[in-house]
Image: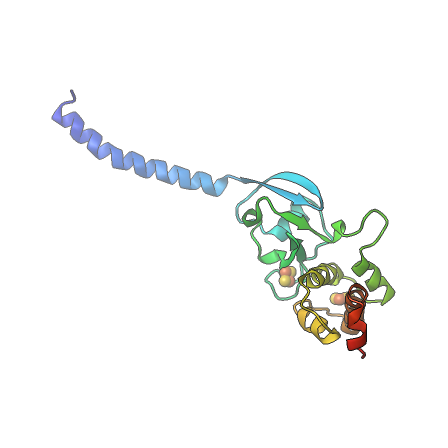
Length: 195
Ligand code: FES
Ligand code: FES
């Protein structure tokens, strides 16, 4: 049975050791990397990242998928648009760890072999780019937009693509390209959408 003195010493020691333990745990959590799994363009990746890594930086810096562009890096330009479980997001604003287990599609994952995705093909057909910097984000955003199914005319396309900026001003041809795919997928739209 411990003496009163020993009991008092232990009673004092416990809070100190808890404090020390908490500090070292806290330090470890800041220094440690976090494991996550993402399926990117159909391939599963087991990854280890710093907790504050954005999805954009993970794609570009760690996986070298540099098709996804960094423009503003704070949600203003849409250059970093990718699809997460089929939904378009700005990857610069997304913590990668939040999307553990998700299916990510980048511009590199849209074509099937040598066959371009219909939106990619339409961008070529309609000459919908100049420097091309915004183009991967524009195309991923358009793929997401078409999947959403809320665009019923060319003006809807322009409105729903408004988060994707193009410094070259290729907006007319971009809207033409996206709307061409929309009309091709929804033939009934052609009659109600004469421009
Ligand atoms: S780089 Fe993400 S919105 Fe501009
Ligand atoms: S094509 Fe140059 S920024 Fe859009």
